[in-house]
Amino acid sequence: MKFENKVVIITGAARGLGQEYARQFARRGARVVVCDIRDCSETLALIKEEGAAGLSVKTDVTSASSTVKMAEAAIDEFGGVDVLINNAALYGSLKFAPLEQLDEAEWDAAMNVNVKGIWQCTKAVLPSMKERGGGAIVNISSLAATYGMPNGLHYTTSKAAVIGATRGMARELGRYNIRVNAVAPNVVDTEATAEVFGDKRDKIIDVTLSQQAIRKPLAAEDIVGTVLFLSSDQSKVTTGQTIMVDGGTVFL
Image 1 (cartoon, helix red, strand yellow):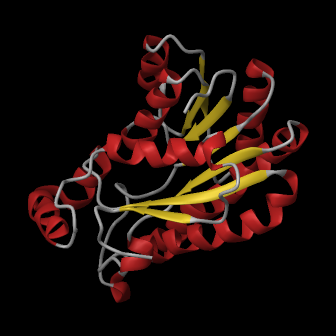
Image 2: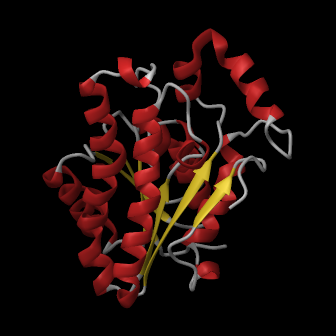
């Protein structure tokens, strides 16, 4: 899977999974635009270490004007957009609690970033993808959407909405040769996971492994191959699908 001369936008790219996606696209020749509300300078440095061209754009995915500026920056620098990885999400910073104790502001924040953000970013890149005759969009969902995450109804609901949005987008955008798919990982050992589970992290990972057919803890590099495949020409007739990357926890 090669991406020479392809322009790839990755949101939520300051750390964790987004940073690893950026590194791997760069390694395969892509011109990578990394976006986050956080500073992406570390990710940009990794892109340049791979000998690839990169650009960092501070982006609030809940803001229409911010996502339009994101797309405009990619077009101004590299001429267009071929791939969008909708990775930005609230997870590590969310407060998890039984549903009757969830704060309304936390619920709204999860929906704004995890669902509205995907819509905003997709809208922003559509004109360029249509002009270029097609493109690929990969939305990052979660095992929580199909398995159900106790004490995380706001997160679970938002990630289920990502799957629904993926299907609706795929049906609507196929006429433009724009493919839209989703990836739903299990718990991945990232900074955000450590923030969510704190001193219970090791216990949670042990419980997670006990439910997997392949009892291997998931790392960022385990998710990359599926994202690359769905972004590449090797999946040019695949759209509207959600691929679980969960060690065999849920079978769809």
